[in-house]
Image (cartoon, helix red, strand yellow):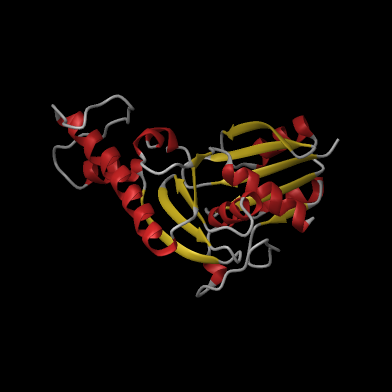
Length: 241
């Protein structure tokens, strides 16, 4: 049986996805990115391939360790992709955005696609019907907005998000929730509408840890998949190994 472990080291969490014979079998949230944590996971699943997407400064010894276990690939400038990057300084494109674009092209070949990731930051990633990643935009994510309002003011508290709140807030917490969540939903809807004016027909993919807060608040029909980045990583792994 072919087993591939796809590691995703993000700004907020370290995660791994286990694929067996091409099918996603399990998602694991890692306690940390230490060699011992990865060793425990590898001993449990015994992968035949591994791939790492990292947007943080991880310990380079991790790469050496994974190379001793099975064929290993690190997402980077030399990664073979199913799309081209005719943008300035393509070597600076984040590994997470590369994985999203790979998934978009794999799922919707020869179609315009806007892939939106809701994590520490919101990234908007546009791939045209010629499989070119044209770029997009980046803005603060939900937790970043809550945290910045708390840290940049004297009295606003740091709150935990919830899905149940009114449009018109009636206290400090619900005012913050309404401002952040409805504000982000308005931003996302507005950017989608701007793309519609320019490209008319295109797909919208939504992923990331915060997507459940926004799916009910978006106007356009979207495809929501919390595991989109992992599916893109698996596709890249197959291409590069």
